[in-house]
Image: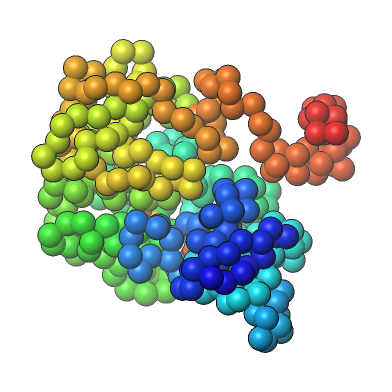
Length: 336
Ligand code: SF4
Ligand code: FES
């Protein structure tokens, strides 16, 4: 076993563990954010650089610090390694830069985007982004593309994380889409806009960290924070049949895989469960889903979820510096 210390917390991990995996073992508050790594998809990670960390001690044998921030999802732990994530102001500044790059071409269409409220880029921008853009060039824009009857691609929102490509490669018998071209002309495409038509294609919607791939059966039906998630299962011969049903009143507006505290699905589900079983009578209901991400979905819904996330204090501290806002002072008083 190898010893690694992340933000002052030490843990022993098996050989071959990445810094990100070790940080996740310590919990979601220590783990760096990820936009392209997805633990259930092989070879994912290494594209977005949001998971960067500062290695202040390489190992017991070679204690020199690493000269630059490293992608924690791709860097293997060495015995005696010491790492900083939340505790390094320079690292947080560097992550701000990464977020700024991710947003360079991203439209500000959260008010009409179905992913708003559960978008990892929205959360990331809120926690690490700057208030305004310094980008002066015209943004890339694309036409919307229909990927078959159930999936809509808004390439304009895509951050090229490759997760949907890995899903198609690893879960479906044949892949029809991929990243075409490179650099600032790179785009997700189906080459001839061919429909992605197979039993597990809907999982691209769940893995997409932004609103680039959305569920056509749910589009524009409701803001996600007006829906109530409930765990349910059914006997399915294609997948585990374990899902989350998103209710508005008595109607099931959409069906998704169940997500964990890192925003990743526990198990991939088939298209029959996702798109064709939208009645409560199709399911055995287990009860309300646990929503423990720092998410607007949990706002006012769950009495147990009363912990104020750290970034709220950081925002309050900033606000207080700017205008001595009473709202910020109230929040800070709660902290003390
Ligand atoms: S469409 Fe979504 S999942 Fe696919 S590469 Fe773009 S952001 Fe990633
Ligand atoms: S999550 Fe590590 S590079 Fe994207």
